[in-house]
Amino acid sequence: MSVPALEVVDLSYHYPDGTEVLRNAGFHIHPGERVALLGPNGAGKTTLVFHLNGIFRPDSGSVIVAGLPLDDEHVKEIRRRVGIVFQDPDDQLFMPTVGQDVAFGPANYGVEGAELQTRVNDALSAVGMLDVAGRPPHHLSVGQRRRVAVATVLAMKPEIVVLDEPSSNLDPASRRELADILTSLDITMLMVTHDLPYALELCPRSLVMNEGSIIADGSTRQILSDRELMKANRLELPLGFDPNLTL
Image (tube, rainbow, N blue to C red; front, side, top):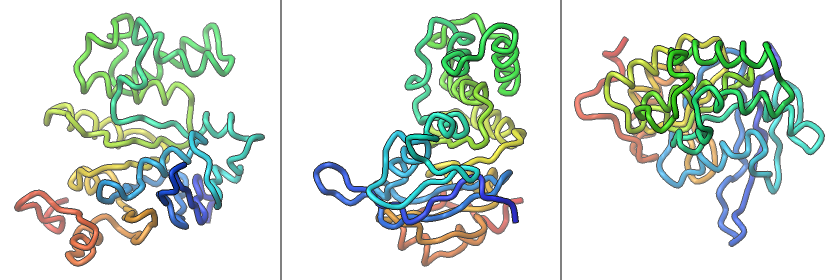
């Protein structure tokens, strides 16, 4: 087996008020896998995501990216390797133009000149947004801004992309366009989502998180077909949706 692209080992974390948010959470993802992280509100999913590139640091346990421990020595490199696309694209888009937003990350890592422009063009092309490079991000639709947010991460040439609720607030056409883009990327992916049909479409494997721990790990179809597991973790499929009848 390959070295895991991402390994989380016995991660525990308390908020400053003492609330336990993560409790010995652990899993691993191998290069090229697309994995969904499912669970009810308050399960600890977003807090876990914030640990994956050092935004938060655990009380105990460890995060390892391609064999590198997430510590003070490696945190800058790990932040390049693990790109996070937040739920609200406006949290990532703040420059006057789309092109400047996509260039911001690699420029801060010392990339410049022709290489920087190539990264911007390649990242925007990968999400079908090269033609809006000169436009202000706030002139774009929600779906377009989310695709640009993905491009800001791709420009860093990460090894892992983590997406927080990528399909939220998208109309059906934008949802489909983003799904096509994400499945075309040759990259390791962790997708946090409440959109269970989207998880089934994009991610062959899923993790279920509740009360700060990973309590199930298996094929997405099997997990969505386990009625007891779904009910116990407050996960509900859309009315009439049968995961076993979906290709």
